Image 1: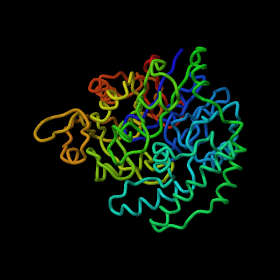
Image 2: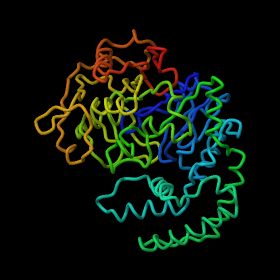
Image 3: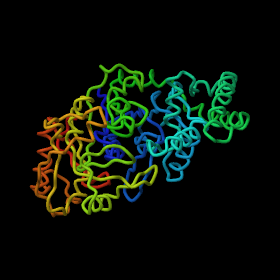
Image 4: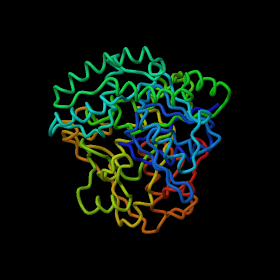
Length: 428
C-alpha cells in the first residue's frame, strides 16, 4: 500500500502537473483534494500539450482512476468545458475514469460575480483573485449556506437552497453595484448540469479508503503551492483552502495515518502571480530573462509571473509544515546560461538571521534575504537523462538545496516533457 502526496512547495506553478503525470505511472488512483479551476497544470506528452484546471492529471492515463475530492469546489460549467476540451484531444473522460465527491461544494454564478465585485470594492487593496468564484464559494461552505453536489442531485432540496441564496446574494450584489440574478435561469441551467454530473458522482471517501485498503497506490494531487495556504501562506494574498499535506485528510475523507509519503515540488528559482510579498524577487534584466526563458505566464490567467532567486526559507517552511519526505526540483534547464546564481538561505530581520517564514506582512517586508552565490552551468541540460550527465555546477546547486532543507531530492526536471525527467532515487 502506498498513498503519497504531490505538493507545491512555493507559490504554485512549480511543475506539479508534469510531475503528477509522471508519478501517476506508479499510481492506480489520482486524487485532487483542494482548490478549484483557479489553478492550472500544463502537461506535455509527446507532441501534445494538455492544459488542466480541475481534472486530476492522471486523466491522461486510460487505466487510472481519477477523483475530485470533497475539498475541491466545482464549477460545473468549467468542468464540462474541460471534459469537452480533453475529449477533443482524444482523452476519454468517463465515469469509469473520473469520480466526483457528492460532498464537494458547487460554484454558482453569484460566487463569480461577487468575486469580481468584491475585488473592485477593495480598490488598491485588492488580493488579485482570478475572479472564478473560489473564495466566495469557500466562504459559503464555512458559513454553512453552500450548495453541495449532493444537493444539486435532489431537485427540491436544490430549489429551496437556491431560492434562499439568490435572494440574499442579490441584495449583496446590488449593494456592490452589480445586476441582480434571475433564479429561474440559474435553476434551469444547473438542473441540466446535474443530469450530466450524476453518473460521475460517488461517495469518494469510501472509494479512496477501499482503494488504499486493497493495496492500490494512491497519489494525492495538490493545486497552488504551500505559500498560498489559507493558514500558512502569505495571508491575505493566498487561496481559500489548505494547500499543505494537512488538507489531504479533510479534503478526501481518509485518516492521515494512511498517507505514507509527501513529495514537495520545487522550481529551481522562485515565482509568484499577483500581489503579495516576495523577498527574493528580481526587478531587473535577470528577472526578465528568467521569465522569458522559463515561459513564466499563468496557465489559467495568462498573467506574467514575478520571478526571483530560489528561496530556501520558503522550501524549509514547506518541508516542516507538510512533513515532506522528498523534493522534486524542476526547471533547472531554465537557469542554464546564467554565469552566477544566488540562493536565499535565511532572512535578516531586526538584526537577527531567521530561517522561517514570519506570519506578519510587516515583519516580512523588513526581511532582507541572505544569499549564497553559485557558479552557473552554461551547458544545455535539456538532453540529460541521468544525474551523472548533469553539469558539476548543477549538482553542487542541487546538493546544497538538499543540505539546507534537510530533505533528499528524488527527481530533477530538465524540461516540460515526460522524458525530460531524471529519477535519482526510487524511494519517495
